[in-house]
Image (cartoon, rainbow, N blue to C red; front, top):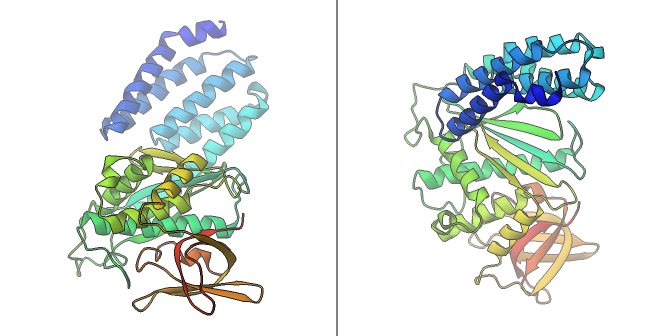
Length: 368
């Protein structure tokens, strides 16, 4: 049977059609999606099992397809079963396929272990952050980089939760929702660097939080991804101005600069995915350069002082013996300034008068 015959086989055609329907159901958040993915995998597996020995390329293509479809169905036991069968005959699949199957098998093992824990966290929501390129390698990335992305995303999700619960913009202090959004790091798939954030409600049912709705974490994730996907969209323009600038700054800092990393993919457990690249960073930066911006000068140095208290929050940078101090907008930088402490930054703002304090319109990392 030629490759053309395999791709024209009714079992493969059925699998393709079921996968198409599963993707559509996933976008509509229809729970039937998992069943459709599983049926697509079963049909593809029936074809794959019929391919005779001595055809490693064909076995690799269709074997990987089966494992990937079972992954989409979250049928971890079937993923492990088919993957182990393929790996047990390494001469019957291509060397490149071995690595792909091993990665999917590893993911299934992790997901099986994680599922046991998540069963104890009812009402949880998930978002995956996958960084790629630059200084990011498969399964390995600078801790400062991944820590910054994770911290900024967590803070932005809390802001989205505050926005959805119609809380006034928080200019200082701890969020009333911060203790209600319990963030957990979960192991995610290798291949670039990926971390999963799990958000679960507090585990103290005897003290029900007045602001917490069971679906608030998922709604916050959905809103964040919706905003990330459309920096010029009407949905973003409809937000209160303070929320616009704070969330735009968060998305700008999460978007890649092409040096530290080239892309970041955000994906919710519900199936929605957004990919941010250097162009997205430029879009967010342009949004921050609104008519209210008044940047006239650029300063570089190591961020040494951050004081968010008082009526006029203050930061200070050191460049050798030179110390420059700046006021910043109250509440606007709170979610993104923390990961920049003790790192070289670029401050954009008004001129600093001699022995006086300037105003920082923006603070961005100046190191790779």
